[in-house]
Amino acid sequence: MDWLVIGASGRRRALVSWTPEARWLFQQIVEDASGNPGVRAAPKLRRPVIFCNRQIAVAGYQEGIAVKLDPERTQQTLQLPGCLLLGKGDRPRFLRGMVALPWSARDHWRDLARVAIEAMPPR
Image (cartoon, rainbow, N blue to C red; front, side, top):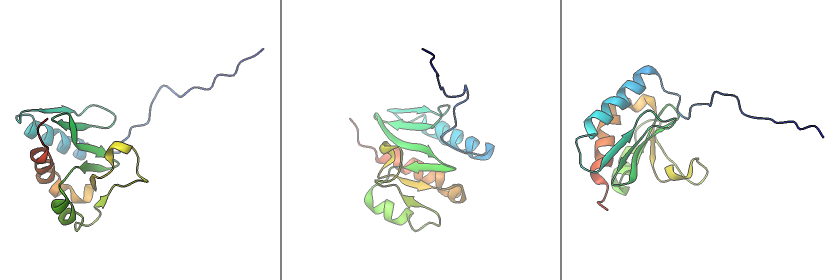
């Protein structure tokens, strides 16, 4: 019996499609947040993330980031052009309920990431 094995290529597709400028900006956000207690960052993963108190506060999403905000701040952020609320049809599941900020909203990345990290409840 012959076996046909189909495997993935050695290179895995990145989950974020960031420009070097976007990667640099995320690295700056990581450096800003690293002084806070309970914050851990994994900026080199296929989907870069910042954890706060073991919960995801900020994650890479397509060409931008996704941030976890309180309901009031979420409504304010959704007024920015290109921002959207990730819901049931969006993958991966752990990003549901977060607000996606595209590269065009990069001027707000730092402030909203800081707000998301500060709003995380302690565990």
